[in-house]
Length: 298
Image (cartoon, rainbow, N blue to C red):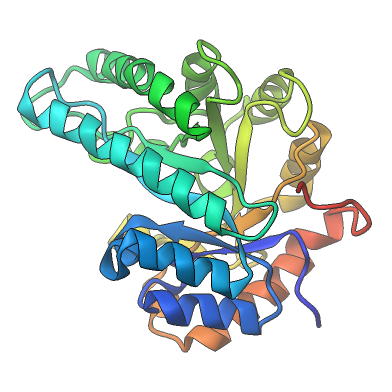
């Protein structure tokens, strides 16, 4: 079975593959796009990573990740914002090196409640303030900051933004080309307002409006002891990919769709097997809902 042309493999799905191997196994599987992470890029250096991405012929669908904005004002917060500025520049460099259709999308994880604090409302406000500070840098670089709401079980330590509506409340204060949102099925499938909020995200013009990227993986129980690693191949759990995918497509979203999986058993498997299984699962659970004749955004 040939790979679906809208499929992108997020590098986290083959977490332990070195940068060159990740590019190779994705390309060799006939997949056209990859979502990159900062840590593997840093291991080879930005300039070299950009060159190798260009040589691979792959598109870049997103760059993960930056954010972590909830610290109160002080040296830690300033350091975080400076690191986000570096991530913006990295995103622009890599997107320029990727094949046509590469997206200059930087995924942002909000950050959890600071140690010793119970101030959830204040933490969320600091996320908004940080994005307001970074938006001019992103606009100048041609980068879209993509706010990713994470499932509420991560609110204390990873992301105080839990619902798509909360992410949109922030994003809508800025230009759609500069600040958007991530729709990740693992994190938002449970939300009773999900379809209303997806439609809201699409109400800002074509090409998905505020939806900067669409990511898919499945939810199955029981969850592992480390709930971060509870993601599964599409179709192996309870998420209704048909309904969510149709809602995302109805916004005009036409870019790549990433499979991003955190699962220790999958990480321990052969990279080539994981990519092949991911491609098959995507085609069966998600690809059937896509118009195969619709062009990928270029």
